[in-house]
Length: 444
Image 1 (cartoon, rainbow, N blue to C red):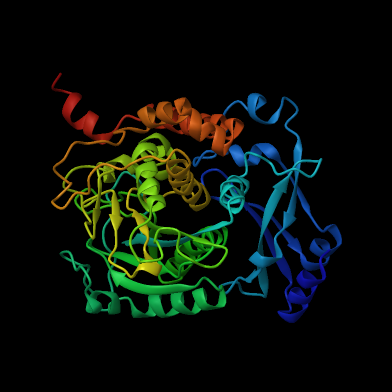
Image 2: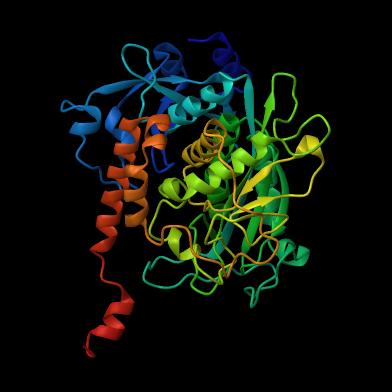
């Protein structure tokens, strides 16, 4: 076992270790081990098929993706991800693991391996991608009946929010005990959270992360979601990262700011005179061309597409513009060294590893293919042509047929990921909704 891990366990007097990996849905899977067993083993073994779990716990036919014998994989701890679990009753640590085949090669189905694969493409050119996610989520009242609509929670005023409170400080302060504990947990968890604001929806909040390395940011987002949910439960409410949890409220996004620096730390999107570089426009064009084809990684569930609809304050196309929030691709105002691209398409329900891998892959392909973007949009893009898939089923077919993305992310991974999404869609499609019973039962 690595000495740094043993030192950290001793320093924090850790009793147990949560050994976790993210599956394709972004759910943490793994084992909880006593400290001594964790140190003695040095690794854990899990069936490779664990990566193929759907969000509701099913698995597609594993044979084509992991082999007929459902073999184990070797999961090794990444010491850089070591964190103390701040809400645990006893000293507990969590460590994210990487997945390896028995020959030492990365498991191609692992979301962390997919993101590493994309980052390595940049590294081969002497580039370092830089990202900064912005995460929206809802606080909602606890309820146990999934057939009932969600409602905003009751804060210290004793009343739920009756309307939208964009950027309201008082609306955030209504949940001061929750946010104070969340802030404390994020600090202990080393999540690098920067800004907190109240978003447009009733009970909708947004957290921004400091920019940094894509793998590190994916780890932080992965851990942050669990931190928010755990904190909410301690305060008698729910926190949800559904893309569209309430019918009459806007959806929740994970906007991704992204740029590239070279070995000297120079922003590849800017030329020496401060003007935008050709790579900047190629990157935008890559997003315009490939975002619609990787939508299952930006909108992974049937619910995701309810957010990406007209009049929902969410993009419906991949138009781009300067400081234009109606576009799927926004260029924030900044100095030349901070020039960046904001992808506003992903929902907050994404697997962060796959969403970051996908957006970086789209931009990379645009640079490699020297694509040119359409004209920038200076008016509202919300009333322009709908350019994104409208349903998960259509999005899966586009992804499966996109050869450049298959080659870049790995054919085996894309096939397995599509199989997981198809099974989820099939399960959903069997459900008879309340709308169908209300309007069809006695009228058709």
